[in-house]
Amino acid sequence: MGKALDGIVVLDLTQYEAGPSCTEMLAWLGADVFKIEPRGGEPGRRALRLGFGWETLRRLNPRIIFASVKGFGSTGPTAEYKSFEWIAQAMGGAMSLTGMPDGPPLRAEAGLGDTGAGLHSAIGILAALVQRQKTGEGQRIEVAQQDAVLNLLRIHLREHYTTGKPVPRRGNRSPAAGPSNLYRCRPFGPNDYVFIHVGTLEMWRTLTRILGRPEIPCGAVLDSGEVLGDPSLRASGMVVELEHPMRGRFAMPGNPVHLSASPTTVTRAPLLGEHNAEVYGAWLGCDAEELRRLEKDGVI
Image 1 (cartoon, rainbow, N blue to C red):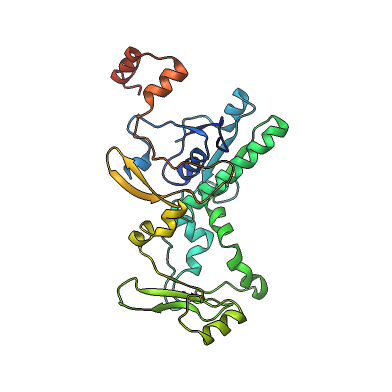
Image 2 (image 1 turned 120 degrees about the vertical axis):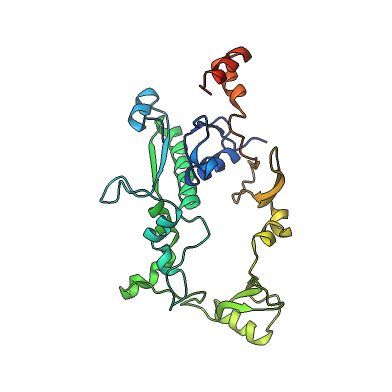
């Protein structure tokens, strides 16, 4: 069975987390992703783009789809500001909503700015691919980390819409449901809490009638080891085990997007230069001797 993006070629010039999370998804959906890096690897391997942009590439190939992730938009007073995950969370409004009412703003460990921007970019690329089938022309996609964080907060801004005042921090409580909070449970370890959320009147009646039964909406606080070992996540394919030539066998999150007619395959990222022979040989016709010369001269 074919994959959704079979035949689509992606040139990946991204670094760190936001861009690679986009191209990773495209690869799992079937695209051929070719990542270009400096000889020492892009900064994300140790912790800019290559001098040509959208206008140049569009002249070379009008069908090309060009996607970029910025910290902030291309216009306005913050256009040239640099950004990382925590900056995007702060500037996108997420930190102001995270934490206890009497405490300072807190960052979230979830990659709202990085992975959020990458996934929004993937959505834009997929939309551009569909439109290209109609028009024959490519287009430019841009996603700002600040914009992605703000979009993920959209439902939490409803209180501001009605009151006109900034939404306060409430810790783990909900302004629209109760009880909705973390509750301590045995054996009282650092993550031994359960989150109970009663969102409707019927749920409340159920809670008061059969307190402690599985029908009550609740979920334990799982740490990273428990999440990666969760049998349900493994059964659904959201947690997969991969073999890595340097790290050995390890578990990692899989693809949350499931397509009935085009299943995805989760694969590990290649080592730096691992596909050089395949790419240079298949695309440029370089033989083994020429590859050795390129390596010796520091080209690859």
